Image (tube, rainbow, N blue to C red; front, top):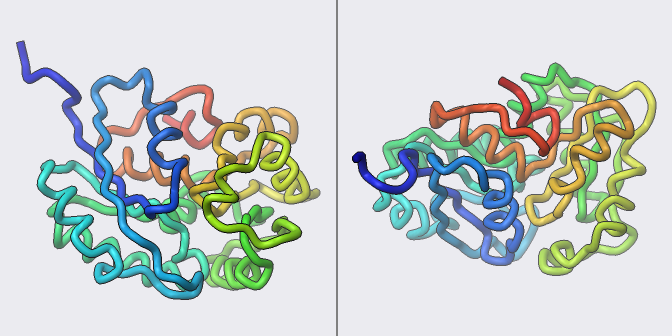
Length: 239
């Protein structure tokens, strides 16, 4: 008999105010007993436009590293507006600390759009329109044309975003679906849009890339354990 428990250990760095990362990931991997996911938390900077680096993460990466991981992910999307290049630098830093390949939610979404060949997208963002405009600019630099944007009428805190019910989440998502687009992107890993991806894909006929789901999808790929996981949309259904 081999060693009991999951054969692959994955690490996820979670903002302290995020209550979606663990529960969504556990739901997706409920029938994947070979995969174990371990978490470490850190506190986000006070301003949305503050970049996240190793200094912000503090001891969280090294504590995760004690579990001897096969891959690690930063479960945050700030790089989508502060710059994907900064997140790529963060990945390099995490790889140095942990000795394992690393990704971030922002890097994962861009990689997912490339695999899906999606260059015209609608954007769902549960934050201010000024930040959504910055995401649009950053995506343009990566050859992604944001053709429609949906943001809430009022700015919400991270816990308030997490408390949105199905009607609130889907109501925020629907305006992003417009004509002549390849996909809809949901940026914000505490927005529980991942639970509604499959249904909206069936309704509108285009992929929906949820940043929390994309993080897990890319984490599995860089760990070398990618596999189709049905029921969670087109991205996780890929071979």
